[in-house]
Image (cartoon, rainbow over all chains, first blue to last red):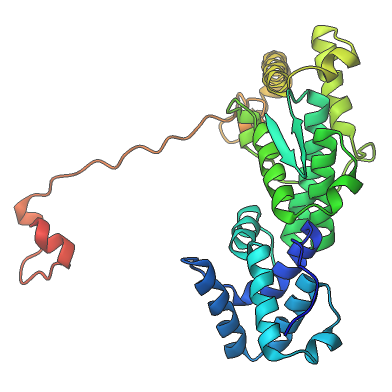
Amino acid sequence: MWYGCQMKPLNINQALQLYKILAPYLPDEIDDNLNFVGKIIENIKISGNHRAYVEAIAVMADMDLDKIMFMNSADIVTIFAQGLYINKIPSLKKFCEKVGFHA
Amino acid sequence: MEILLGNNKYSVEKVNLRLWLELEEIREKFIRATDMGDTDNTALSMLSFISVALNISMEELQDLPWYEIAIAFIEISAICIPKYSLAMLKVREKEKESKVSWEYDGRTFYLWSHILADAYGWTLEEISELDFNDALALLQEIVVNQQLDREWEWGLSEMAYPYDPNIKKSRFHPLPRPKWMSEEIIAKPIKKVKMLKSMMPVGNVVWMPDEATQH
């Protein structure tokens, strides 16, 4: 069970770092927030680059990579989904595309 | 216009020329940073943009949620879009590789102030307080007038009529105009031409599906 502190929305610098990490795995279509999160996890699994998953959590939860590696896998997924939800990842994608931010 | 940041509301009443130029300079840095995917400079330029526009410190903005910063950035950018579709702004000259030795950051305001002051005799403070839309429109008028005056003087000088040895005559060469002052090329619509039946291809003609439905 994850007993971590409540996650806060990221500031602009951290949000852009998160976008850079997740950009290759973000689906093109945003139909539903829950599906969107599920698709990201699936894309990361397919790519085999699980480090991106852990790095994204480290940015969103402000935790060390080592600490995350020893956490319960169910908690990791919860933090990941929660982080993406709190940080409005579909809106972040739209914003970065609109301003032409090259990840 | 009111902008909500954190628990505070800020209003942007009017963007004067000086503020607009400062914001444009920051926006140029933002564009360069986004093109390179530089997170630090992108974030810094966004915060700087909002800080200058709303006259609040960067420290107050640094820890706000990213979406509030993004919304504020977009809203302030929208206010800074020129009202008039000026030719001077539409056509961008290719950036020269080497800058002149007297170029420096923040020069644009003094360059434009010099042009406006020269034309109308205004002080720096009066020019600073001009609405940026008015300033842009006036600048275009001044520059157009200067070009037309130069063309007139050019037409009266020998340099406009160089000798052409091929035709053994002097020919008029107009003074070149900046790209944005060139005549707009409006593409003429292609006329439909009727073909004689006798000129049409004979034999079994295979039509593409769209053409088949038309014929």
